[in-house]
Length: 166
Image 1 (cartoon, rainbow, N blue to C red):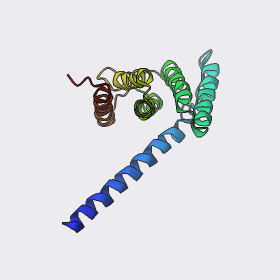
Image 2: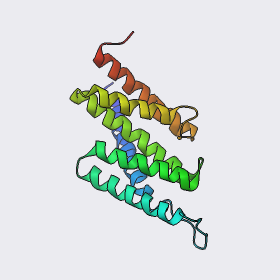
Image 3: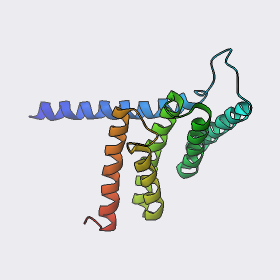
Image 4: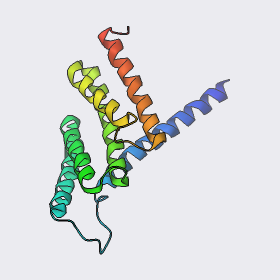
């Protein structure tokens, strides 16, 4: 029995490492991910929108590295909606950014729960809920369902902490 529980722990640690790695690679992949292929023409005003996406990505990364996740998330959200304007729904760039935003809302929402900031926690967890809903911006079913399960679990923790399970 000991060896099977050690194997389980080893698999859990491996999964956690892969999850952390995929979250950081998703953040890194967003930087510059919105670029057009060589030779593609830009629509009027699109160049400015691409510049704004770069700025939002840079600020997200800087603020996250400075340990200011709530402020960083605001810039990530801005980048998501700019990508939606430039690329439209269903684009890989928007999908990656929406998944990252849903994940960050969950992480920061639970940090807010732990700190007792229930208003901020509820706002962030509801954003993750909306992003992962059937009509939300996360379209990839496997990723959407995984993020939705995390969001529902976190909402359960939120309501338990508030004493509102019924």
